[in-house]
Length: 71
Image 1 (cartoon, helix red, strand yellow):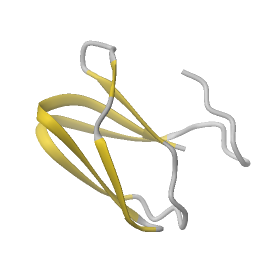
Image 2 (cartoon, one colour; image 1 turned 45 degrees about the vertical axis):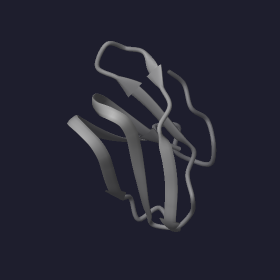
Image 3 (spheres, one colour; image 1 turned 90 degrees about the horizontal axis):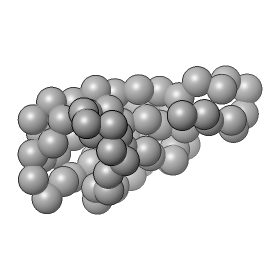
Image 4 (tube, helix red, strand yellow; image 1 turned 135 degrees about the horizontal axis):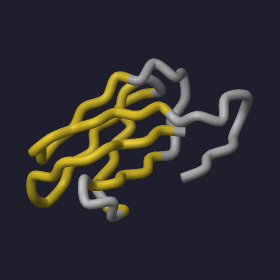
């Protein structure tokens, strides 16, 4: 997976396990793009709510495990 935006080409990565809701305090100062990759390497969709420029919540219909990439 390749991300290019701004000065740092590496995304912020947040791993989660067996969760229906994931809250992330990323402190990036903006509302980042969100990519979700499940533990079986399948890209997934979740409901993403940007609480503010430093916090977001991802909600899934069922409990999932994987990684959330922010860019």
